[in-house]
Length: 252
Image (cartoon, rainbow, N blue to C red):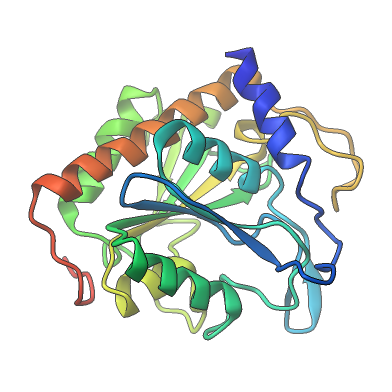
């Protein structure tokens, strides 16, 4: 298990939060997989909204990459400072790349990873646009999987799951989140997953936007890795068995 945390730190070390892409680089990178599931981390590095720089969701890029390595998911992640906000604006390069990946590799489900602050009163928040971003069968599947890994609505602090309350993935907003874009425009089920800092940050890097030293809960980070890997495999199996057809917006 400790090897997973070491690997997570190594993968995250390649992300330069506030460095613009150098010549020949892009703001984001793609990691190929073998299952028809894409794990997205659009805020893996700092990004720009309304002309202001917003800090990175540190370790979401590393987690997405590690999940891809362990599960076989495809991965798209920000690794350099972005001049836009992929989770806010329409028609940005990140979404253009995401569209190409979904079509080329017949992606059947998208998990969009984000990070929330350590002070939140939950470990994980799910955003499904109040159920509009995925069929109810996927929602039930995800909640059952969370429960098996020790996360539930009535759990204590880091084990508590917040569903469509604090983060809804953009329902009723002008913001074009990744989850809204994928489910409503590409016709592929999607869920936004917000992870408390304690569930993802092994130890804060010196170049992070947040300057205070911080270390997450190693046991909970390992549990979260297991959960994400299990989630990818479960939705991939379900997509292969339920006859889900892409091509139209996902509705309940």
